Image (cartoon, rainbow, N blue to C red; front, side, top):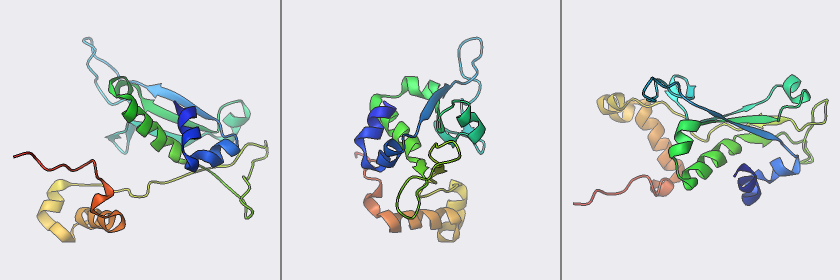
Length: 166
């Protein structure tokens, strides 16, 4: 699936051109005696994450590991449909970027592997609904939401908000 996504979208072409290698690994939550999850498979800053992408250290790359690693929540993956899986995998792959020189050529390390840069999200924010309710437009929650709306417009999330049927 990752190979198909890399070939499908032009934004991933630099990864293909530089022959970036990506390992994918699944993480699973601990389960109790009845098979009920006791924790989250992956967390980031104490919150559940469905996936994480990281650059592999040079030493490990020299020893044969890939250039980057994507860890996916295996419990979520099993329950997700193919469209959701593709979207998450594309998201994690999009974090991987290749460092380029002033001529647009991929920069390589001492072992001729492409130098990887981790791309940050366009928007990152923490949200407390109670703070947004208490302080409205003065809260960072509402300020950040307005910044996202200003940047992307109301239709930035066309499939997120749907009016309730009456």
